[in-house]
Image 1 (cartoon, helix red, strand yellow):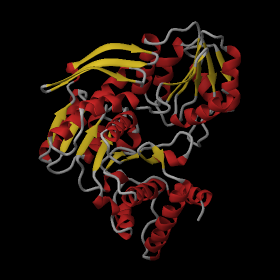
Image 2 (cartoon, rainbow, N blue to C red):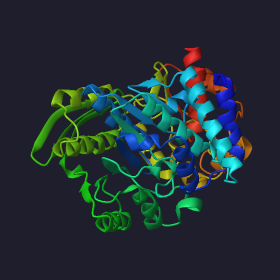
Image 3 (cartoon, rainbow, N blue to C red):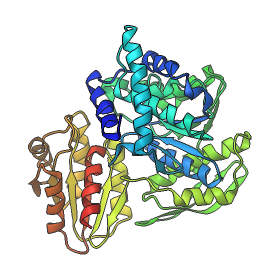
Image 4 (cartoon, one colour):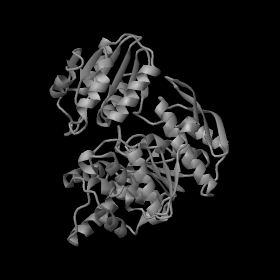
Length: 432
């Protein structure tokens, strides 16, 4: 099996849909001799901030000299991004070799009359086998969807269960209240474990507290009241942070937006808690370097300046709030040119109601995924709030249109879906 054949096999399993539950992944990993049992995990769930928080944690551990696996989803430009070690993506050859091994085990499952694993279950199995084979010290494991029945929750133990901000998203699967969604996220909490949670809304917080108590786990709430923001700019932020008797002054991060300070603080609380427990050895200098060196593609990422071209993966109302606040508080520009595509199963009306009124010109396009809302339908919704609309369903032409419209002091922003901005990132990088 070569790399292309591996990708064709992985993506060909989409037809088996998305099934929440752990029986399939347990069976598949069992046939692989349970590689996950030899790994140490930091498990990260939440609605927003999972990827950024995971990256902050991983990079901080890397600076301490550890070999760190990072599993995230979805990818932006190439599939290999989904599993990396010390910021290097899995190689094409390794992916092909491990995928072939996993495929053979899937065939054994089918011969025994078992269900075919879903795409995410297969990808999870590949990652577990890869990290075991490469003998990593730690794996920072990002949940795909929810937590309780997500295939990443096949792990029996974790050094820490980290829960980032929780809001309304995927309500058709996770539940139609914040409490139900929080219960699914809290499903990653392990017996007698350590839980790090961002402060949540009252209903969500009560659920997390209740689950932690039933699991006899120590719950630490990120002390956001101990964050002191020094400055936020279009190049990053500086802040002070205090955890128990530890004071860290003038910390720097390169990720843009005040919300990234809170993601960094969630990661920092996790790192300091693990250090306090003796799970890791890390210096203050490694923590500082890890935070400042963290990059996370597609999250308020500036691809070009003069004009400034920004992409952001905001795909729910909480993410749109953060994007809007950052555009208002951090960036200076003459005109805002907004490129937008949204998946039809998202909270489209509230997302556009929040974001499109602040734009001077809007280019409506379509993400390259079957769930994308058609550009014409999205444009009609947008026109209720802003009539300055151009429809261009082809992403590359939409990007080119934005450059044609913009002058040196304008701001171009493409957002609304992670499936949009990956393509936009590739197009702009080639163009510039």
